[in-house]
Amino acid sequence: MPITPKIYLIVEPGTDILTENRPQTEFSMTKSAPTMQPVIIIIPNLEKRPSRVYSIAIGLLKFSVGLIIFLSISFIAARLWLMRSNGGPGKPPAGYSSMTELYGAIILGAIPLIDRQPPIPPDIEYKSGVTYARVGDIELKLDIYRPLKAPKDQRRPLFVLIHGGGWKSGQREDYRPHALRVAKAGYVVASLSYRLSDVAKFPAAVRDVNAALQFLADHSDEYGLDPLKMVVMGGSAGGHLSMLAGYSNDPQFRPESDPTFKPVRAADQKPVPLKIASIFNFYGPCDLTTDFAKNVDVVRGFMGTTYDKDPELYRKASPLFDIKSSAPPTLIVHGTIDDIVPVEQSDDLANALKKANVPVRYERMRGWPHTMDLAGPMFEYICGVILEELKAHAGRPD
Image (cartoon, rainbow, N blue to C red; front, side, top):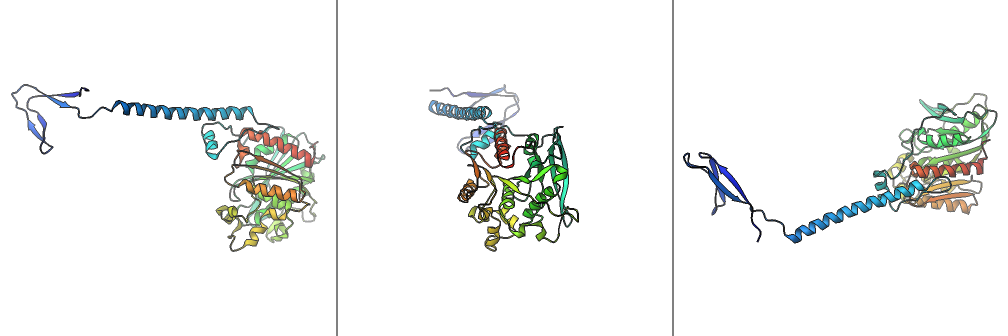
C-alpha cells in the first residue's frame, strides 16, 4: 500500500488557522491561542498517484510520438538527399507523393529554392522599362537581355517571357532567372508586362502580348534579333497568353482592334513580319470552358463576366479550340500534383496537338506542383529542356 505523503504546516501562536467543518465541507477561520506553543498541522495530500499501467501507457505514447516525428524527419531528409543528388540537365529530380509531403519538405528546407532576383552579370546587356505601347495613360513596358559578345548585325533568335499570376498579379522581373540563363547561352531575351485584370479585361492582355511581339520585330535592327525566329514562353496565366498569341488568328486579339491602343512605332514605319517558331507553355490553362476554370474567381475576374452570361467568350479565350496543323511546335511542362491548374488541362492540350500533327514535347512531371521551376533542381532540369527546344526550333544563337 503506497504511503500518502503529508504536508506539515507550522503555525505561530495568535495566527489564523483555516479549519474544515467536515459535515458541511466548508472552511472557517479560527485563531490559535496567543500563549500556546507553535502548532504543527498535518495536511494529507489527497492527490492519488497514477497507477503503474497508466504510467506505462503514457510512456509508450510519448515514445511512439517521438518515433513518428523522428521517422518523418528522416524520411524528408532522405528526400532532401535524393533531390540534391538528382536533377539538372537531362535528369529530372524526384517528385513528391502529395502536396502535404511537399509543404513539409519546404518547411524543413528540403527544397532549395532559386534566387528570384539575381544580379545582372557584367556580360549581359540589360535594358529595363522599354515602352512598347501606350493605352490611354498606361505605358506598357518590357525588359531586354542580350549577350554583350553578340554583335548587333548578327541576328539572333528571340526568347520572349510572359509572367503568370492569375492575370491579376505578377511582374516581368519574375522571369529574370530564366532570362539570364538563356541570355548567357547567347540568345536575345525579352520579358514583358501586360495589363492585369483589375485594369482591363479580356482580351486586353492578349492584345498587349501581340503588340510587344510586333514592337520587338519592328526594332529587330536595334536589338540584333531575328523576327522570324521568336519563341514565346509563359507560366500559368502567361502560358495561357502565349498559347493565344501563337495559336489564334482572331482579329480581336490584334492591338489595332482597340482605337485607344498606340504602339511605339515611327509614323512611316510598316510592321515588320514576324514568326513564332515555338510556344513553351508552363502549366497554363488551355480550356476555360471546363468546370475547373469557369467557376474560379480569377478566371471570372480576367474575363469580366461569368460563363453562364457569355459562354462563347470563354470559348474564344480557350487556346485549345484554336489548334490547327499550322500551330507552332509546342513544349508543355506540367506537374501531376498541381492544385491550381489541373494537369488534365495539359493532357488535353498534348492530345489535341498530336491529333493535329503538331510537334509537341510534353514534360509531365510526376510529383511536382504549380511553379515547380522555383525549386533549384527542377530549375536546372527545366533550363536544360528550354535550351534543347530553343536549338531545335529557333536554331543556335551563333
